[in-house]
Length: 140
Image (cartoon, rainbow, N blue to C red; front, side, top):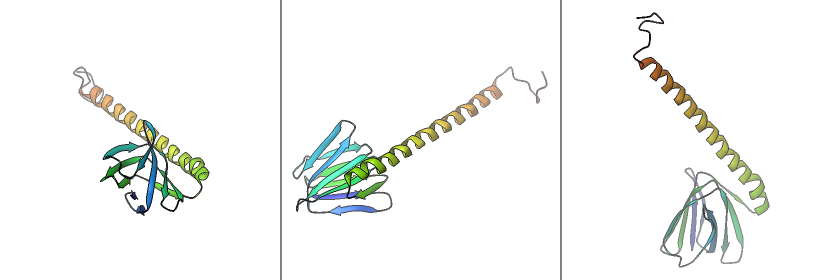
């Protein structure tokens, strides 16, 4: 099988001697072998593992992404961020923690942005109210 892992700026993995891939989506962990049916899923932040034809196992942490299987032997993963590693424990502890922290920071930023938008909308609504003063605080 061919395994292709890409980010917006790089091809992280492009291997053709892959015999098995293990990944994780919202429903849990799953495996892909040669001859797999056409498949498309959204990955969660996790560590992908795959085995090469020589038996060597490889690892790559991904920060969410989309996985597709085409023609039964082409696995493509598009992700925002991917980090290769030889030590599974290190990837799980260090990299996944970093990815999860980034997701939480993005979530906090979105929350702050929504709060700012809501304050702006409230100000606009106050301004458009028919009973508002007509001239800088002066009554009608």
